[in-house]
Image (cartoon, rainbow, N blue to C red; front, top):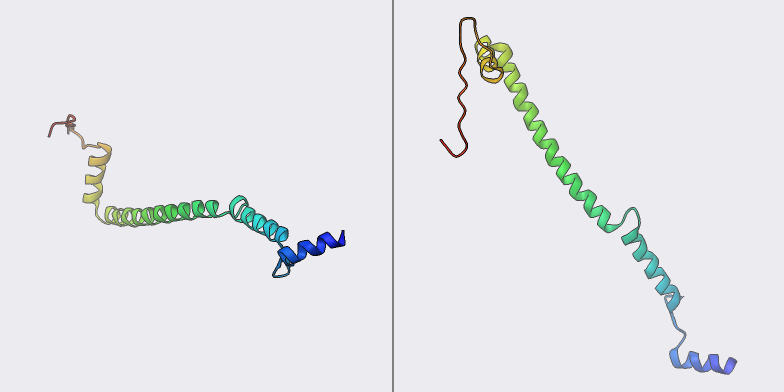
Length: 111
């Protein structure tokens, strides 16, 4: 049996790379691949989470700008009663006494 092992070792060398056998290297590669592709911190999940973060950051920026615009409009409405009355009449269809409101809507396709 020793004779066969010696012949195999001569034919293929020691079979070690960096102190590891070829089977150990294959197992390490499979484990590393499994960690990168199938674990909770896999590459595909990481890319998906990054795209979600980018989308959420853009939503945050949109709502931040919207809040600034709404805050500006609120300050204007609080400082000027004429603007407040105009806003209430246009958006909430409020009216003064002895006043009538006519709502005119465009039909689709007409201008």
